[in-house]
Length: 431
Image (cartoon, rainbow, N blue to C red; front, top):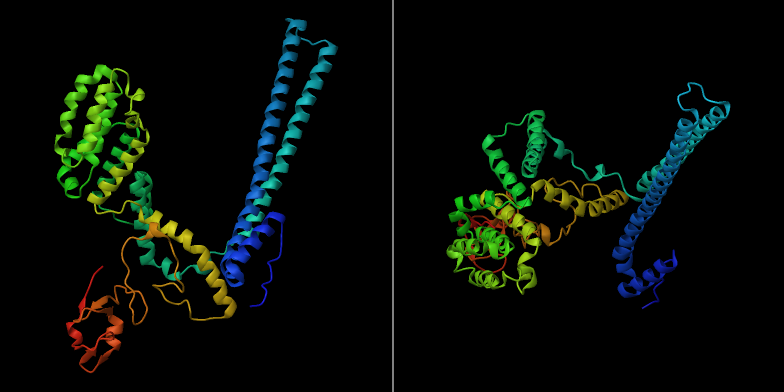
């Protein structure tokens, strides 16, 4: 093997980091994977550097402005006091005071002009941030867009997704305004569940458990069917709040503990811990081995649990489809911009003309894994609604397109085993 050439140095620390990464990953991986990542990091650092300069200027200008104006106010206030003491009730000012007042007016005017001049200097720094963004970050995102996304039907679907997102966020007035502008007819029954959920969530954020408990009791059977612990955890939080009241709430806490009876089978250990904490009411839970019961993170956790279970009962995903799509787009966008540039550079016309698939596979991470995806082992393509997976009689699975291509007369031979079968016997399967 020939000796690899080291990457060019462009800074002491960066050169050392480049050298280490280069010798770890080798020439090919460094140029294909590592170098583009470092280049993107450098671009972000360049923008961040300009932004920090602006923030520092804003901070120093604010401090200078406050100090200067404070001195000016003190000076004018002192002058006013001096004039009132010296002149009394006389209408005309003596010549000396008139001169001093003129100098004061001139000082105020000069100070304002200097502050305005310093403020203009900040404008140039702000404009440099915009130029740094344009220079370092690719702003031509339209090249990876598809015109089909902006057709009438697609626009209607996008508007519906946005309306649902606004309903989820509780901004009902914005959602209704969008419905009017987009000409959408949304059934009131679609809005009512979100109104109730947002009302309960707002109450939970204010540490009011009553609306959530009423909802959980009303939907107890469906929650129990999906093994939800929501109602138990709501009662647990209410019980802990009684414990925080000390011995004054001891009798009430014992009475409230009866609410744990339906959950004794699945939450026996948790209930035992809650009952054991009663022994330390006199000295305070915060001074006992049960101090973990007072963890404030429980309130944010109960909001997440309620959102998850409520969405499950409504047949909705926990996250808004709009936010999920936006997050996935942010992850995929850099890779799509790069592949688009390569396609244009190599003039590979026709590589990216499929409406329902991308020219490369983009790893969105486990957070965006929602269901299994079947890829046909024959055509090496992911199945779709128009090309679903088909199970042959022998048990092997291929795509419908592959099945049609392998039909020979009225017979079909499995590509994995010698079994011959009738194509009509194949059955569509669902993941």
